[in-house]
Length: 328
Image (tube, rainbow, N blue to C red; front, side, top):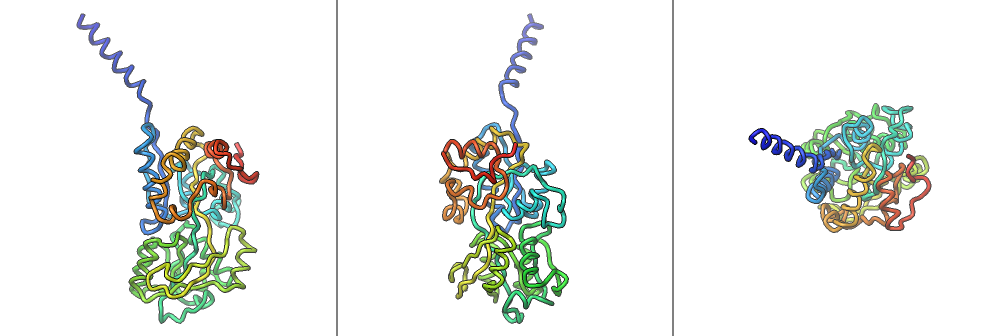
């Protein structure tokens, strides 16, 4: 009898184990702590973990767009936020030196989240009045492998400059770069981020700084050469002590996934974020509340979308442009 009881207990335990689905673990790649990608990714992870019992998501701080794309390609992360221009070049293996001829063909789009203007901030008294004046100065160009670094290279190139023309090329996290700017250790910084990013607010509020505008001639050149750039004017008052509007180019921040992530899981995550918990999603950051709607979720999409995302768009009768339809 005792032997039968032990057997039945073991059998019951096995049945309970097989009845509970194993949790799937998803890592979400973001950016630096002082940018917008990180808090948005943390917010996404929180919504997933609160509502999907069989998926656990963890948001991590990373080097940004290109880092996230490569990490998806190598299987180290499954979801991420990345700039649409960087996604396009990486998917096709063009423009970006690190991956030229080596397409990162596992990245798939889910939705376009918001616009990211490329901010260029200079220190007053540094004799910088235009992008051309950056020659010989100490400039933060973005973290290694970030979308900001790529944007900086392309903007400088349009003005006939390279990193070699700068007095010092500074990489690292943007939060540290802001401190260097405030301390007079660098003269200018580039940062591609949503308006109101905490690092930019700090630079504007605490320092004797100003935002540089791109002139119309070079704005036009950038748009012709790099089709994912669009002109955007940031009104005066968007930042502390910002007395003048400035004009720059902007890209779009995309939520992307690995093609290896199951269609059902991507569908459930997308539906959860963009339909069932849309108000909670928009409440993560003001830029989402101001900018995001799933009806515009394919504006700026630069890579094929995931089958799971396509399923949601079809359900909601949102037309998917041919150029970003699923490829597998």
